[in-house]
Image (tube, rainbow, N blue to C red; front, top):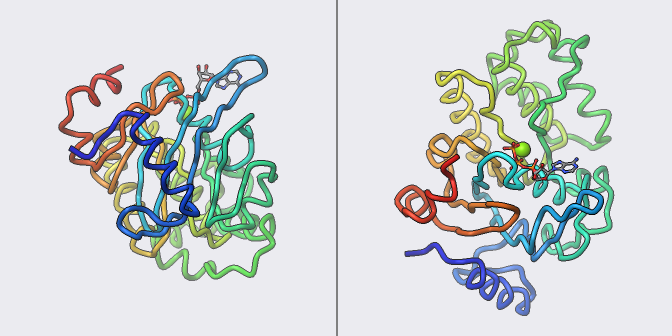
Length: 261
Ligand SMILES: Nc1ncnc2c1ncn2[C@@H]1O[C@H](COP(=O)(O)OP(=O)(O)OP(=O)(O)O)[C@@H](O)[C@H]1O
Ligand SMILES: [Mg+2]
């Protein structure tokens, strides 16, 4: 069994941290290392010593039911709700204390759950706004994004508010690519999508991984997330309870108990 309780996980992470924190047991490079973060909303303590890591090119899911702390974990990483204690390293650089725009410039993309498409702008304009906001010399040109998402190209002149939920989700992901992220944080991309569209979304997420982008995918849709992920973590009441391969998470009874709504 590869899953382990938090204390064991922490011990392993601590071992790695002492060793400069950049490589794991198998010598794989870590893109993101979250180490014992505690996050609050005002007086309310929401994340308790959350630790996780995403290695280069990995697709890792963060599973948990309603209110478990998935969004808060992603918001902590991107700097929208910074943790009060703990560390977050991205390619070895500390993120705690940095502002979201600085973190984005370092190569992290964030697609929030509510997608935040500009309703009065066309698909193309939504993508171009993404580039201006980030101010990067984008590796991901509009043409390259359209190559990856050909159905978006067909909607080039369509206004944001005329798009279906699935199309909006695709646009939100595509927009985050314009900043040429090395790591993408995706918050419940399958939410509100019909089962057929969830499959389409899974293919898109897999395509991103094939492009070499590391992904941390927060999901309540366990089946969908485990179909695409290499590994995953289970969060419940603001604490990480398990981590393991997709197979471990699918088959372990105790892991499943934390996911049943
Ligand atoms: N702005 C906020 N102010 C106070 N408490 C909040 C705020 N946002 C979230 N919380 C609380 O923090 C906890 C974790 O919420 P979070 O949104 O991270 O969960 P989640 O796993 O993303 O849930 P969901 O699947 O519903 O999106 C919940 O108890 C929630 O009520
Ligand atoms: Mg959420």
